Image: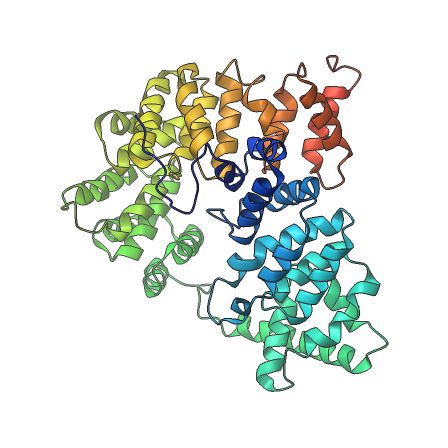
Length: 486
């Protein structure tokens, strides 16, 4: 019925490894019940081979650190991974290779693991991904532990113009500035303090000079100049910046020029013009969107998708007027292409109960054709919950079980809470152990407390200093004076 996951790096959802890779609560519960050697092997594989689709938005480190503590896993495997010769290999991917392991060490240090703290200090001195380790230490270590690291870190940067520039960039880009301030104020190393003050002042001066020499938009630019600037460096970031500039410089008298660019301009300029018109609900914006989609529809299946189409569909999703919703209903019902899918996503986000069948059909079709990990599923899943589409529960449960994205699983849990009467006694229980704090918060509000595991888990979450405030607030609401008996 549904497309199976095709990512060969993610194990099937029914295995212990697959559960832990997904960050599911059942992963922790199964690991604690499994033979210890099997559980340790699966946990170690996850920590050393980051399974996340997007490490910048998905969480796993606290989830793995908690299980690491429960299993008393030891640090030998993480140490061997961090200080393996591969850590010295040039090229990209350093953060992906060691970032998760360093974050797990950070949480272990916050739980009082002195060995994890020592490993972070050692890696900050000699490891390639030292900045990540330093950021972990910045929020876990005390001043006495951070100050001795200064000379070793600064020794990475030769006292040459290039080295000073790299040092300034490292200090400026640090996620946590606390260690750098400590080193700059350290009376035991006056030369170090002077060097850091010097590069900080030089960095501020260089930033001021860059602002004076900017080649970007200036006051007095016309619509034509903004569109030409967008075309110089095509891409979503430049298009978004150019659209903001148009909002400041374009007036009613520029509409003809914008329409011309939207119909026949170069790709980047065309995308920016359509986005600008769509954000203002221009009467011709919907026709322009349809024209771009129709152009893509006549291409052969093997032809690459036009670069402008994605930007145009993104512009459509920003439209808020009643006319846009009416047209979206037509497209969602009559088109089986990218425009039809985006239209269904609009209805999921802003439509009414009359759109429930359309949203459900799009959700089922997307899972069947794109699989349970498709980015397009997120708004459709949200829409199923927002519109309380109860017959969507089976497909939502499938997404919950199979997706490798912990973010999407959390959305599915939220939708199930609104559509599935079995959620409180079913998935909500395992969600108390989920890797995403938003999913744990949902579970804390909905999980039935008839299961002794639920009561014990709620109490542990309430007492855990590493737990997020929102989760603990949800837990306290279950134990408050007005809460039902637990």
